[in-house]
Amino acid sequence: MEMEMDMDMEMELKRYVKVWVLATTCLCYCYYVAARLPKGALRLLSILPVIYIFIILPITLTSVSLCGPTAFFLVWLANFKLLLFSFGQAPLSPPPPKLFHFISLACLPIKLVQRTDNDNNPSPSFMPRLLLVIKTFVLLLLLHVHNYRQFIHPYVFLSLYCLEMYLQIELVLAISAIPARALFRFEIEPQFNEPYLATSLQDFWGHRWNLMVTSILRPTVYYPVSEFSKRLIGPKWASLPGVVATFVVSGLMHEVIFFYLTRVSPTWEVTWFFILHGICVAMEVALKKMVKDRWQLHRAISGPLAVSFAGVTGFWLFFPQLTRNRVDDQVVWECYILLNFIKHKVSSFFIG
Image (cartoon, rainbow, N blue to C red):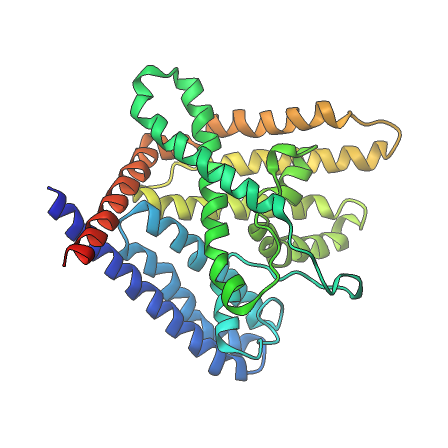
């Protein structure tokens, strides 16, 4: 049985390597060929085959642990960045001087820090590294909790799973950024900003949760829709359609990622989750514009309310597709297989 699992893992890792070799080849084409075409329709036309390849590549992977991040990096981040690149927009335009810088910026969840004259010698902070270690330890404990699931109340388990998913996403994105930070000495912005400290829904989604997605949705969805809305409803309220449109696109992209994870037809629950939050954030922005500084909830009240609302609606609409298709159990099982695979390979290496 263990030998069979090792063979399956070895085959999956080989497929994973092939996926990223092909993805890297496609990005080389974008750097050396598409970048030399004038920005606009012609460059977009030259990049469309790459976008299509990136969409189908994750389907070749069967494990949640490898397919999920690959789909996020290629289908969402890289494709959206390539669309911006087609029209001469950052972060890929103008192309960086080195090919591997271009590849890293295209498909990794990184955003370079915008340096100013006042921070030429930024001092490394110890606290983020300590927090990362603590979060890793907590995640390992939560994965172990799955062995006792039958003894835990369903609502308590869902709460723990919510925390587990947050930690998994943050750690995967942080680990994925390590090569770019180590090899190229990139100064990289954090992917998360302690979302449990949010003071409002707008703060949660705009400044704390998965900032890589936020940074790519602003130029691709929010800014164009807001600019268009100015002509129809004026500048004061133009941001509200932009907010709602951004959440709709985010919901649809999550449906795509969930399809790669579950391989079942979408039920649209996760889309409604983001539509609901988009409407609520738009209402919050509108309310702030109307009352301005005349009245506001204390952050000690608004923060827990915002985080609780995200958690409760997540139980209702976001997590059911994952738990219904046992994605949570599959992740734990794959971690077990991967650890055994590594242990077996290390033992084989030292024994001979």
